[in-house]
Image (cartoon, rainbow, N blue to C red; front, side, top):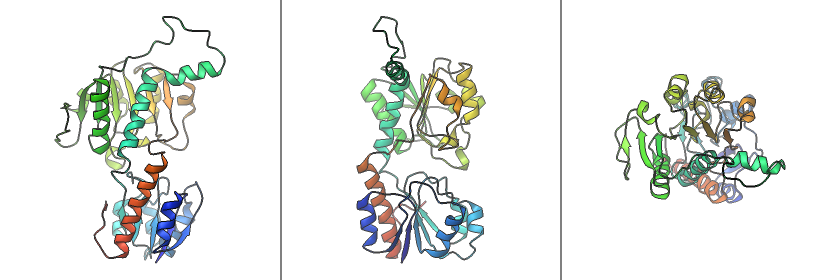
Length: 314
């Protein structure tokens, strides 16, 4: 069977796919363009895509009888794939949950600490040669220990963030989830409006139509002026224009972002603000994590090849 790997992947992952597939490996960091998306469905039995490969409804509509029967997505998020349109075209979709949990939670804590303690701003000050030495009121930030953290989305990643915040930093954890859940640690489930009142609000929901602009003008207005917003989910969960306005008017104190609504484009207004920590989507950027994600995607491919139930169907 012919497999298309759409982007650069760790060598170990590519080597494993070659043991059972006729592999076309696109050693390119850029997403598939419109023509390549359609060729992928038309000319391959399976595709291993990832974030940015926009398999939207129009792509499936243009290939009414696709050869491809599986999109084995590399990543837990799959909002770049219209799953309903894929299913209607007879194509299954899988993802890679679990492998990304701890790495993404670590980045959430990185953003919390960097933003609360103004670490990015401090580094820029020092590198620019403008640091004149320590003094008692220099660059005072938020003391994160003992604060209240509000987590929006208490799935695997949300729980991992909660554990780090509660057990590592003595934070009080409150959370919002679409269904009642036992978080497995001292934490209180509350309506979204109450969770938004926390000192630190962390977004950890899946991307997709249901969560598009979950955080917009009305939600930001419910946050406290001293609060920090952290997003490690998907960029379009936050209305970026509303966030920029809230930051510029100091409606909220600061934000830490690893994802962006129009990624890879980052709004110049965000880059101009010192009260924003910006990371280039580093959530899973560790070799062992990317290898684990790739191996999980290959497990899905092999199950499909063998006619077995898919381990991670979405």
